Length: 159
Image 1: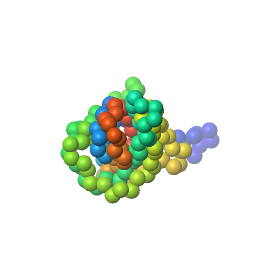
Image 2 (image 1 turned 180 degrees about the vertical axis):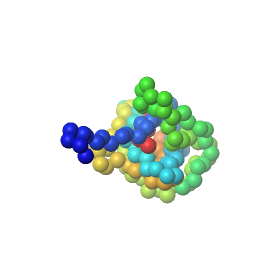
Image 3 (image 1 turned 90 degrees about the vertical axis):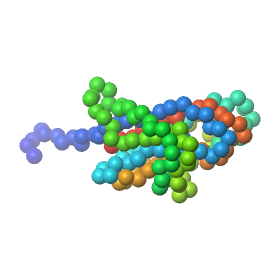
Image 4 (image 1 turned 180 degrees about the horizontal axis):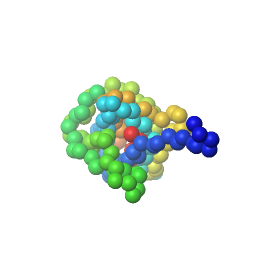
């Protein structure tokens, strides 16, 4: 390599899916993304915000989970975080499930979130969640609330 030449790693496309939701009163998946068949996808950040009305309500458990089936849902809108670049994310997602996807109940990670707060999961570099091959990962409520709670979520990744 010539003197003074520095090689830099080219980053992939950074993208996200985000939306509003109502929890309903059942355990449910809010979002699922499908990894790429020939490339790894790195989950970089996940955020969940709840808009509960009771300050004495019990925290709800949420988590990321391996899912082996697609379930029945609406296609989500993926958006690039690389502003000014004409890039199109290749990862596809779905949300608003009417039939739950098949899951293996292996949650990684898992969070207890009070219904009047929010939580952002931003892993330490080197400890991000990797989706290899065309595997699925879902953002799911693990415990059912006593009443429906409105909120919002987002999931960011690099492909």
